[in-house]
Length: 177
Image 1 (cartoon, rainbow, N blue to C red):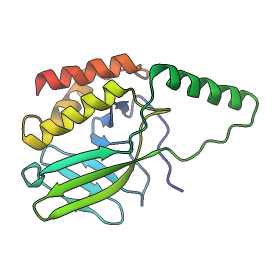
Image 2: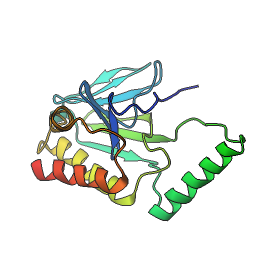
Image 3: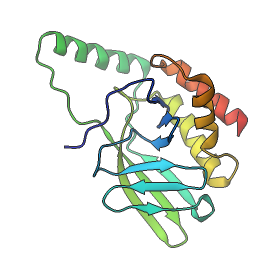
Image 4: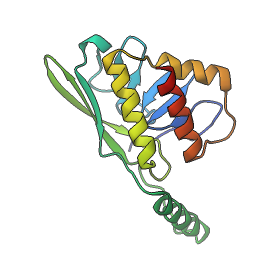
């Protein structure tokens, strides 16, 4: 069974489809070995796990994330409330985190992998849209994941950011790209 690490804001946090920390940026949440994790580096994506690979951004023709858990604010709150109620009645059993599919397209072909979602319940539609725009900027050479780790180093946010706060951070990164 693959598990995501417990959320410890001092170690990193979810912002959109990313897990951002001082030591790097993950697409999705970091997973324990041997589960695959896609690390976004300034030089390009690096896949860890049973089939490790490394690409440079110039090699990437496209990078897409599909099967992203997306829900409206109302549905996210309802799901969260149901989880809290189930936990209070001692009938809640945590499951594996939802999985997202990442496809990396190069001139040599397309490679798919599955990564853990970092969202506790689901992402907002706007978070997903902004995250995909940022990924597109990485692929097109207009930005690098270094801006995310630099933000982490400067701000070191305490606590977990709410959906609107995560969207604001994504907007900031897009403005800097």
